[in-house]
Amino acid sequence: MSTKKIALLGVLIALCVVGRLAFASIPNVQPVTAIIIICSFWMGPITGLILAAGSTVATNMVLGSGTWTISQIIAWSIIGILSGVIGKWFKKTPVIILGIYAGICGLIFGFIMSLERLVIGKLFWPYYLAGLPFDINHAIGNMVFFIILFPVLSRLLKERAGYMLQE
Image 1 (cartoon, rainbow, N blue to C red):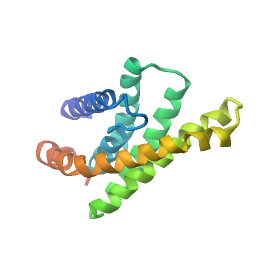
Image 2 (image 1 turned 45 degrees about the vertical axis):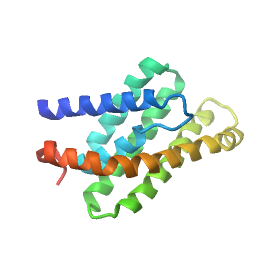
Image 3 (image 1 turned 90 degrees about the vertical axis):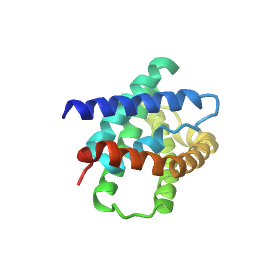
Image 4 (image 1 turned 30 degrees about the vertical axis):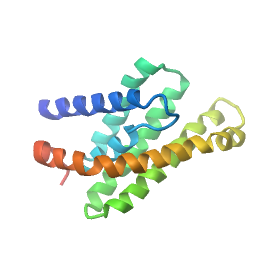
């Protein structure tokens, strides 16, 4: 991996951290998932994995870490890898379809986060169902952030880092 790509990843991780902190007062609404989806879509699944892990660790240094940190890394990594694969195979996907996909990713994220309850031996379904309104907030927030950020980040990534985008 080149120094320029590492620097770009550092800037993108910083963007995720600032975005998550800026919206920390609104439950489950932050631009991190949308940024991971967009960057993975253009730069590939490995970039999505690195961005997901780096963003989670960096933001949890400020917001607090716990057993959920592992679940967040897993959830955002799965979303990043999936988005990278979609970007590799389906570059011409309409933005509105990708926006709906971003919303679905909010629900997937919540489901994966809830799976932690199974691992630690607690009841899964009551926990998951109680968290569903927050997952819906995440899904709606993802769609809004995606629609706003996709044109801006796509243009920046293509103009400034076009040589690093997946082919």
